[in-house]
Every structure is written in C-alpha cells, then in structure tokens.
Length: 490
Image (tube, rainbow, N blue to C red; front, side):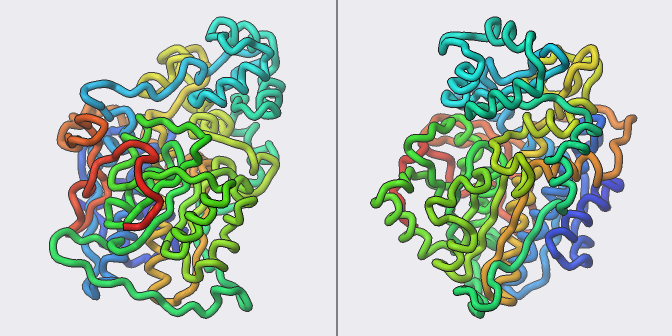
C-alpha cells in the first residue's frame, strides 16, 4: 500500500526536511493499517504517523550508512502507531492497570474560566497545596472550592511561584498573542545543528565510523552509548527507541527526585537505570567517567536546570568532542516561560489544543482519565493520546539518529533541540486539517501488544512501531527496577 493521505506524505516530508534528510528517501516509506485511529478535531493520527515514519527512516538510513548497503524499506502501520502512542494506557503489570494521573491532576472551573493542574509527583502536589494555603491532607473538594473563587491566570502565576504546576486554559488566539506563544512561533519544529564552531574544542573532530553489525536483526545503534537524563514520557520514549535499535542506554535519575516505577515499566524497555547525585563529588566523578565513553546525551529537563553541573551542550561537547546532545523541554529555550516546568497535558491547555477539542463528551475532570477527547458544555477537552509527548519522543530519537549519520560524514558534535510547545504548534498550524468524517474504526490492538516477563512481573505492553526491513521486533530486555544498576557502561 502507498502513502495514506496528506498526513502521511506532507507531515513526513515536513518532519524529514526539518531533520535535514535527503528528500528522496521518503520514497522508501509505505503506509498501511486501519483508518480512523486516534480521532480528534486536530490531525493527531497524521502527526503520530509522520513522527514514527521519520524515526524509522532515520534508523534505516543509519543502518545503511554503517553496513554500506541500500536504505532498507520502511513500513508504517497505523495500528502499531496508535497502540504505541497509548503505550502507558495499554500497559498491564501482572494484570494491574497503572494509575497514570493523580486526583489533583485535572481541569478545574475558576471564576473566569478553566485551569489545569499537574500533581502526579508528591513534591508537585505539596507545592500546589501550599500555594493555595491548603493543608497537606486536602483533596479534590477543598482544592475545587478555592480555585472556583479565583481567576485562572492568577492561579497560574501563584502556583508557578510556589514551584507547582497550573496553567490557564487559553484559546489558540490567546496563545498566539501570549509572549511565550510568540516565542515558540519564531522557531521551526526542531533544530539539528553542528555544535562545534571555529576554535571550539571539538572543531575538527574527525568522522567517527560505526562498526558493522553482526548477524540477525539490523541494529543501527549497536555499539553506541546513550546517557539518558529524561523523565516522564517524551524523552524516555526517545531513549526506549534508541535501545530498541541496539544502543546501550543508561538512565540517570537524581536519588532525591522521585520517579514513577509504573512509568518506567512502560518506557524502560532495553535500558539500564542508575541514580547519581550530581551535586556530590562522587556523583560528578561517576558522571564524568560515563561521559568519557558516551556517544549521546539526551536531556529532558527545563532549560538551565542542569547548567550548574556543567551540563550545557557546549560544556559537554568540550569534554567529549564528537558528542551528540539532544535537548527536550516543554516550552522551548526562550521566552518568559522557557524556564518553567511543563507536561503534555499543560501544553495542550496553554496552546489552545484543549479549547479546539472541547465539545460534547465526558466531564472535564474525567477528560484525561479516559481515552481523551472532548468535554461537555464547551469545557476544555484533550487529545485521544498524549500525542505531544509521544510525537516529540519519536522526533527526538530521529534527530539523534540523523545526527549520528551526519557525524559519520562530517565529524564534530551535534545539538538537537525540541520542545512540546513546538510540536503543539506543528499540530495546530503545520499539518493538514483532520478529516471530520474520519471516525474511530474500533480496531483491535492485540496484534500490536506483547507479553514479557520482567523483574517487575508479567508485562503486557505495546510493541515498537518503528519498523524497517531487518528491524528488531522488540527490545532485547524488559525494564527493571529504577536505579537498580551500577553507573557503568556494559
């Protein structure tokens, strides 16, 4: 089957162009699968399809580069893509469904509109309640009463000042006029650029060849080492994909910063996980030893958060010439919100996506607990998947793979920069509108699910959607316990 509509062709071509790829290679991609998946007013399925397509094409290109053969044919199957974009909802751990959203992570009616909060982590919950002058034991009724009497933007600023997360629901027009919306609009979907300028330590670093892979599945990232400094969904999806393709991925968490084991059970396939306190002498020494052997560093923290540890892209490349650095943030690298924390659900609300998706459906407070979709009475809605997270994750992996290919040609270091808000703008302004007649086909996800025994129990999980001729069918190892591994390379 050929390409599926303009979402497959135009979206893929736009993303591949942003990655600096040879336009002729998009002809290696074919599309198939049931229609009508991830239905929404916005073109969610075209975004999902395109991001997976360019990721698979970048992997196929790197495979050809290292093995000297033609670029393998890429196949994008809509059922696999839709299942993978809902991977955290498809996950079962010994039959148990993980709880992905805490009670205080929801929409709230305010005196003048709506606000969305994020309180999945204990420290974010504590900061939200402290900002609202509520006790640590407060729940939904108490928070709802307080927020109902206050203005949405005032709540947004008060909670932010306390280190918490709350975002006022805006229309697309309001976001376009907002200073952060203006800043985001000034940038492309993503950037991929050389990090070594004249006179920098990495300038003139020769091309780094990649060893040929052994028999069996084609693993274009085999032998490469990836330091994974990411959390939640987008960054871990990217590094999960690099692990699928053969990379030795070591996830690093701060011991004082809690993370969800259930989330890692979804995105930790193929990886190892360790804890390092970069504020300690021993932690820094261990990190520097790892950096000396790394090919890629992927960071998912807000801009500036890691600078005090000497982890700016320029500093990393100076200490490890030839490094590929990939950075992901919620709001982008500049503008008044550049340093703010953010998550997919909050970016949807701020950028007007939630307003576009509003309409008949579930109550607002249930919108993110169900399969997504619109909400009743003009209240904010949600996309049918956390598509900004997943889509940006596959774009991030694609950028790393393309940088590795370019490094074999030109040498030097590379920097990829992405943001959820940039992906949101692509969804709302860059892709062809969704077909209103394209309804949910009610497909069976079973062919795109696997079962694996792990240290965490029996896992039912989404299979990888990134496929090309010779690609692996699944990951080499299941996820394990967070921070259970030593901070060393294999």
